Amino acid sequence: MERESGGWQPSDDELAFVEEVALVFERMGLVRMTGRTLGWLMICDPPEQTFNQVVAGLGASKGSVSGALKTLTGAQWVERFGRPGERRDLYRMREGGFEELTWAQLQGVGHFVDLAARGLAMMPGDREDRRRRLQGIHDLFAWLDAEIPRMRERWDRRRKG
Image (tube, rainbow, N blue to C red; front, top):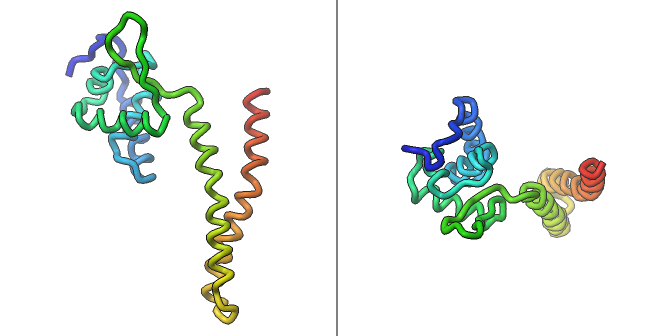
């Protein structure tokens, strides 16, 4: 498939990276093409791409790329925008999107603490084997819940400094 811009051609290593991103995201429960599209937008040149450039770069169908971009823009990892005087939309990774989404997901750790605590509260005391499983989950997530704000503070200091 011919590239719309006729410019940058990814290396085999870059294409392998795109595929690795796809596999990581697939293991996280996303459709592989969503990960592939995100991987492409991580490394493509220029960093903003038309729909047709993404399709050509990935050698994928328009339908699969359309679905992936819809997912990625909905999740706010990717933004769609236009330039004055141009009729076509462009796509790029949203600045700070990964960071924001990572912190937002980590905030959900507290829900597991509460859930495990409710399970422990309803469990009879004579069922130590069953309680031990829930206690391990509770302890891990309680520790993470306490550490996340400190991690965020250190990250913010590192980014500013």
